[in-house]
Image 1 (cartoon, rainbow, N blue to C red):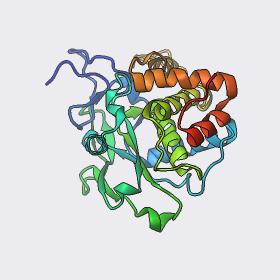
Image 2: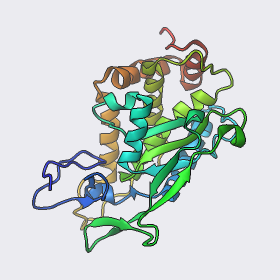
Image 3: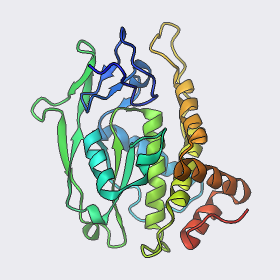
Length: 282
């Protein structure tokens, strides 16, 4: 066993004498603190997606495009996500903190078949095992043809890495929702793509805003709970990771987006980005 593994959620190193829960996915593991709210099934992600969409619409006052709420949300293993990162040359690879955790798929991915995890935690084995023995812990989803779902749409699904704690998974969905919002905007032009730093910076900004304002208050730890950091501490760490990211696309992109947001607000910022493919001068 590789003793240098880190928790998929909070990045803490796995102690040799107190191993984390094994996700049975590319040697990934999750600590007991993150395991309290771990998301390993696409059914668990749907309420999180609904919360993200409500946040965009009700808290940020962003218009929600047709069929936006019905975008399929798929919880997938590392290999399925990594394969898509490779095929799309996605910028997610470069960020030191967020690693490859999510992806917004467009109509160009129609027809592809994804294997999705269906796992449950087995305390006796200290690992995640198949929730459905017959399906061996997996089910499959084929990306629909965008033209058949909605002639105006170019987003066909959103992928999120399995094994993340709920707050982190929700922030990943908020990040990917930003990409989807931009691509579904009536004025978005595929011939004039938004530069990576601008789009990823806005996505990180909205993920950060969601962690700040879009979630229910974290549950306090029971006095006898020795599983590790509280949900509140984990949430603080996820926000800190966004704020201190050093990667030019993600870190500097976030800080430029946050500066613009502080001057003109989110609705004006997002509209400017779609229309002019750049941050507004502030």
